[in-house]
Length: 444
Image 1 (cartoon, rainbow, N blue to C red):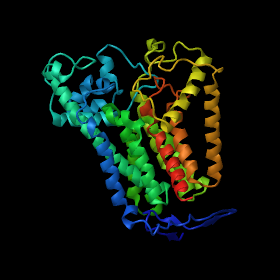
Image 2: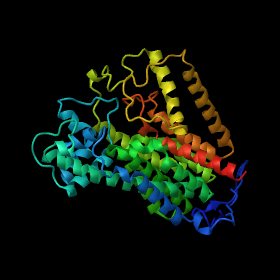
Image 3: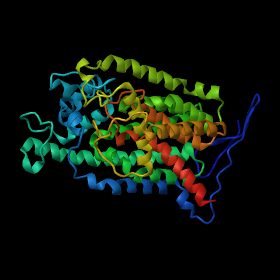
Image 4: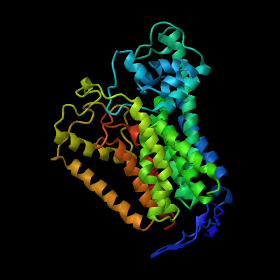
């Protein structure tokens, strides 16, 4: 098949191909605005801006200490303190195994938590940071350095370093997100740049970057973007088998970061269909190697994660709907889902805590429940409407909804009502859509 090379987009664009009765028009090549300086379209310039913006916005976290689940995943995790020696245990146990053991307990969360990649990064950091002074176990709430002994002081000093690394990982992931947007999603480098900037500056992402434990979110999105990139590079030139191998490895690592990678069951073939002009059947066939990786991960996960402890079912801290009727539970889940979209549009007020009764139980007499249903059904309709036209907004809506489905509690019990960090992946779709709309309005 003949190909055209777009000078502002590194990915070759397939020319129109005729498949039986289906004819797909080649995307129109992007033409830079002659009034704009040429350097603004380059990846190098945009990447530098994105990296600097990421660091500047979150440099204030460098002197932060622990927060929220940092205690469970780092402070109370003996495997992290073992450094390199603890990696084997991290890979073969539930993420909260060490924490549970200290309380003679077992898995308290539905489905367990197998997310070893970020915890391995903490163990690697600890290897170079050095051991925490021996003594009593760290309390579940760690004292501030000025009020503590040498053990707590060392832990808090180490947390400063971990926050620096968190910002580094965020900046790197944002550069990779930019490349993903330029290379696959948009033909227009300025749209990609706008979407990446919107993502970096959005206040709802503060919890992810400022909470070291949420490095799993950062690594997950970064590896998902790399999976897309290598998958597309392989289909540019199938002689480059290394691209396929790299894509499969990144996909497996994305699962080890967090479970969002399962969303690529839908999003990867959809991307092939929309942006490579593959037929539906070819898109699915191209995705089969990645489905095999997912199956392998699921087998490993099932052997490692323990079943939920029976006494946790009615624990309001781990099951916020324990006191709700079935109707109240479903109504509250539906209405709460709209909160995410509201916070993406108007991020105020933001909160790190959405535990029991922060969002009161609702029922089907609440107009917000029906508004949420109407909004999300409209989004589903828009997804298929734009999909028929192979439009980028279809991918934006799908990226938002697929990742939202994983964390909205309706299908999977996430052990909490909601969390701003949980909309991190979905907000990529939101930023793609907003960037497209803003650019079109700008050039109306």
